[in-house]
Length: 90
Image (cartoon, rainbow, N blue to C red):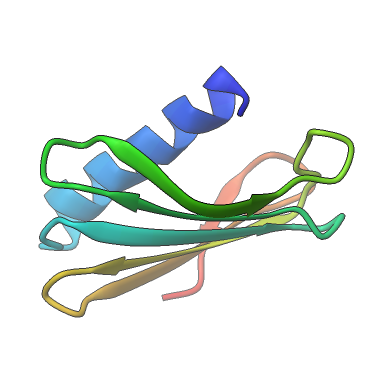
């Protein structure tokens, strides 16, 4: 998996912890415009555990939709637009 993409996911998790009162562990689902999918967990130690992954041409294309669900049942939904900006659904 792309190191930049992993760092991006880590940044999103930090925002979920700081701004949305979400509690680990987390389940993260990402879907790229090209059909690439990643479903992973972040445990309490912030370790990424991949549950399933399918990448078309080893990449995710924009826009990418991301859903994060926490242990306390809070959910954050985001989209990375074609311009690279992050928008929030919820």
